Amino acid sequence: MIVSIIASVSKNNVIGNNGKLPWHIPEDLKWFKEKTIGHFVLMGRKTFESIGNPLSGRKTIIITKNKNYTHSGIYVFNSINEAINFADKNNETELFIAGGEEIYRQTIEIADRIYLTRIHRNYEGDSFFPEFDADKYRVVSRKIVDTNPLIEFLLYTRS
Image (tube, rainbow, N blue to C red; front, side, top):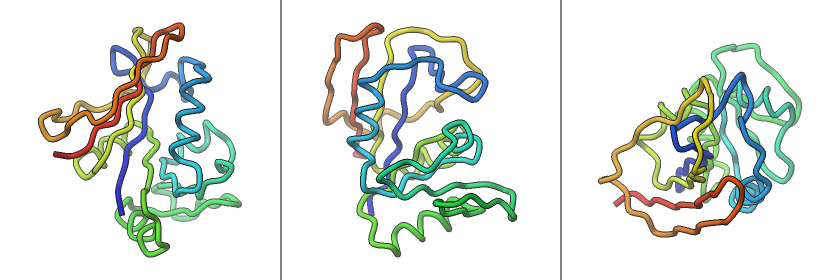
């Protein structure tokens, strides 16, 4: 199974502010949906609660320290390893990790792929995408989209 990170990241590495995306870019939302549809999508509890519902057409996995956390239509785990093993045992071909900051930090070293929407503007924020060793990855796909702000879809694969 391929483990992939998918994230939208501003020029100054912001991924969120006060529990929300600081931008609304329809092309990025479409990219996210196209890549993740039909797959397991793993995220932290706070990210899930900011969305509010399971993602349509996907199997949503939530990571939380709260052993009593429940919500209909999702799978809940207390560790990332348990969640990854669950997706693998359920014949997933590519698991998508969709944040937030702490989940990205814990998975950046194991990701086989990183689907990154680079937003070419700085934003105020309180959640950030972790630095990663670009030497361990190569860019296999790059597409610039002339939106306001300008965005770039990048696909990194582990070298």
